[in-house]
Amino acid sequence: MKIVYLRFYEELNDLLPIEKRKIRFSHSFKNNPSIKDMIESLGIPHTQIDFILSNNNSVDFNYIVQNGDDISVYPVFESLNIQNVEKLRPTPLRQIKFIADSHLGKLARYLRMLGFDTIYKNDFFKKEIIKIAKSEKRIILSRSRDLLKIKEITHGYCIASTNPEKQLKLILNRFDLAKNIKPFSRCMICNSKLISIPKEKIIDKIPPKVKELQSDFAQCPNCKKIYWKGTHYESMMKFIEKLIQN
Image (cartoon, rainbow, N blue to C red; front, side, top):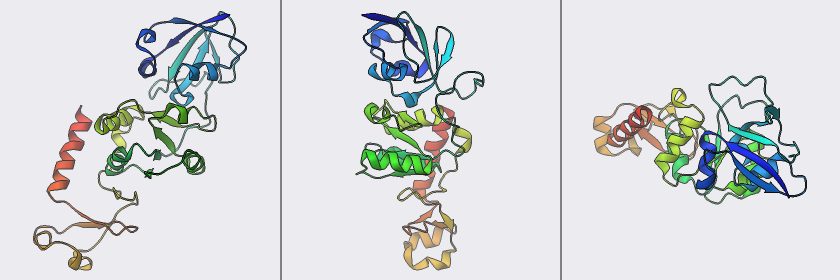
C-alpha cells in the first residue's frame, strides 16, 4: 500500500468529509492512479480545480501519483496571477454562459433575471448537457459530482447548496460576476434577449391598469412574453440590491 499527503484549499473543502477539511491528511492507494482520478475518488470534480502542486511542482491532471507525494490542490482564483503554473484546462471562456442541469430551474431563472445567458430544461440528459456545453462553450452548473467528473467536461461548477438564493450568491462570487449584472435584459422563461417595444404595439395584450400606469415595455422575441416595471419588478430590484451588498 502506498501513501500520499493531500491538502485542499478554499471552497474545495466544502466537498470533503468534515474530518479532512482544512488540514493536510494522508491517503493510501494502490496501483498507479493519475492525480485526476485520485482527486475525484475523494469526491471533488476536476472542474472545480485550477492548479495542483506535487512536491511544490506544478502538475497537470495526467500526473501519475507517486508514493510519498505531498500534494496541494487549489480552486479557480479570480484575482491571483498564476501565469507560471500548469493550467489544467484550455483557454478561459471569453464570455460567461451557463447551462444548468434539471435540478437548478430556479437558479436558472435567477441568472436570467440578472442578465446571464443560461440554458435550462427540466428533462436534460447528461449527454445533451455535455454536447451543448462543448459546442457553445458554456459552463455546466450542477449538483451532481458524478456529472462534473466526466473527462470531456472542462468548465463546470458543483453547487453544494440546495437554496436557490444561496446558489446564486455562490455563482456570483465564484465567477466574480457582480459587475456584469444587467437586470431584466433576458427573458426569464426562455433566455432570449429582451427588446424594447412601443406601448401601442402591445396595447391589446396588457391589463387595463398597466395601460394607465406604465409606459416602458420590453418583449421576448421568442416566446412573446411582455415585461414592464410593476410591483414585481420593484421587489426583484430590492432582491438584487441586497444580493450585491451582502
